[in-house]
Length: 368
Ligand SMILES: Nc1nc2c(ncn2[C@@H]2O[C@H](COP(=O)(O)OP(=O)(O)O)[C@@H](O)[C@H]2O)c(=O)[nH]1
Ligand SMILES: [Mg+2]
Image 1 (spheres, rainbow, N blue to C red):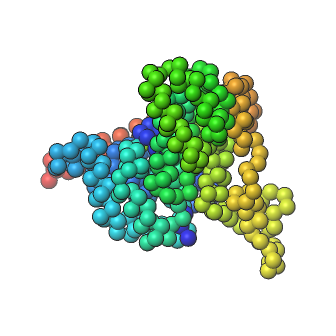
Image 2 (image 1 turned 90 degrees about the vertical axis):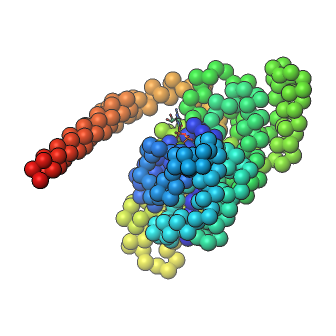
Image 3 (image 1 turned 135 degrees about the vertical axis):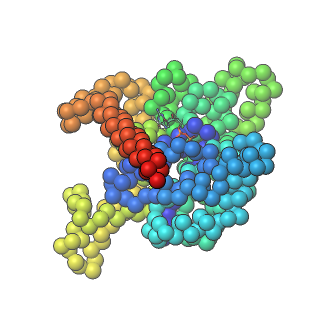
């Protein structure tokens, strides 16, 4: 059975970066993963893409042909995708029945909160292609620094939950940048657990004209009535953060990862290669780490996240730098510089070989 994530959220919330990061992580873990880009505005894809909506329809062509702006063009593209779902279905079939697919959606939030096409595409993915899906809704953590922006983010998240009707994980992305925005009014768990929003009243009344404050309070009571919204956190370059989010998503979809037989499990894991008894359960470790029970370990609690990224960020950064250095002989910055150097060298090599090919074909033409 194929599994997948509908990755949605406002422009710049980190959707494509998250897909790229998850691709790197899962490839290292030998977990299956493919990415389908459904955002026609994504020109420069950072990740290897199994299917790209650009092969079906291009935003610039639509805007030019129908004289539409970018938003109208995107609505057209999504309606076109809905009408031509066969294209997506065929492409997904090629990924096989055990595929794990990330769908990178456009950032125009109305498409996942109001307009019907994405909802219909999601329904067809479930009903026609047999996908088990979760929605992963990324929200820039910057919004929690301002009470009224936080309220609008809550409303947006609630709207997406009600529209998509999927197991839903809201995520505060770029949590690593939070300490740059100054002190928060409350601890991080206040914002992620969305327990008692009435505490926001003082801030809202103090910072907004009375009518807007009243409007915000009305929205708060609506969010509280539904009692659905909560948040996970994400710092995409932090492995612990990515693993914890992945486990939360696995629990929502019911996905159980079976590590390949050749990988060595932690102590206590039944070794399938040598133990052929009927009762041997190859997935005991995977089952109990991902699909069952509350998340355990460092970083799984929001208070750990607060300590790592808000209260003691410099201390942890320094500690991790030292750890990297002692393990690999390089700091993360050195490693990044080295990787950039490699990709720059590869770019230069590509350029030179294209230039050589161009000049030799030009020569051929002249000779011909
Ligand atoms: N510091 C930090 N930056 C991030 C993170 N995720 C994304 N970004 C940056 O946010 C910007 C927008 O990300 P992008 O993936 O293009 O957003 P999208 O429009 O939602 O696809 C890029 O400059 C990313 O490098 C994160 O976890 N931490
Ligand atoms: Mg993007």
